[in-house]
Length: 402
Image (cartoon, rainbow, N blue to C red):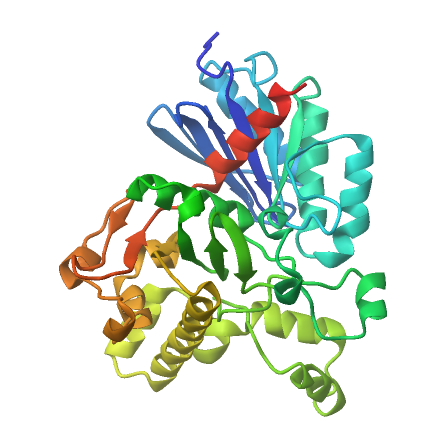
């Protein structure tokens, strides 16, 4: 029996029809295995597992998340690692919304599960799926402590001016309406990595972090504490995203209901799944959008321009809020790989101390790197995010206190 997994943390990210997992050591950052199950509960379900340099993809019925985790455990066993007896430190679960209740990593209990379920009205597309993963893991690995790490936790202490919506305060209080922010695990991890890269205390830095993936968010972080973020009560607010609209006039929702006769669920689907880049040009993969632009597609060009316009607007706003900016950092799939997006987002800002070095920006890599010119007074960086490592570390800290 392999002992390589002793002290490791299994990180689970359960979506409505998917399950991502990774087994890693939080202290050494060593990734022992990872995988993803897709189309759970649907035809054509499959699971891909990578371990010991071997990648296996298997198509098989996966009726639920319990079956997906059970199959992943068999993959581990085939490689000599029985997760039930391997000495795992914890199972760390990504939970999207912590509401007003959860703002630090939390040991999962029956009471915690009940509260996550209660606040699922704040994230009906995410929290129920997260709970399914939690229940499945607790059933299959009952002797391993489970820890919930919340996407909203980092932004729990936003200043009131940033967290408060200007609606009737009684209604807001009764229905828990405020800006919660999301991608917090990523923003916190990246801001700490920026400080390490620059060899400066995180408390000395004012930062703008741009998490640009299919979901996208921006944050303003002063001295290690967030003072503003683009996502709001839900992950729909803020930047233009792959399939989400981001900011829009709330009157549009009423207009769609009154004039277009769309119901609430139809509007929800439109704004979350059929808008953003996909809604503007039919694509949300930046490689495909770039190809369309090169071919002269006006819709793709407009979609790209809208995306960049919104991104620059947030960067400018956060520069004013922070007063002094030490670093602007790009992360996540688009932020780490789309050099053109980075260049256009910060183009012609020399008067503000931001100068991109084209050669540095064009280089690709999986490590933290500087893309600003030597004469730039604001550091511009690309820092890969690692939410799995952040979740593993936070989970390990919780169980260490037991």
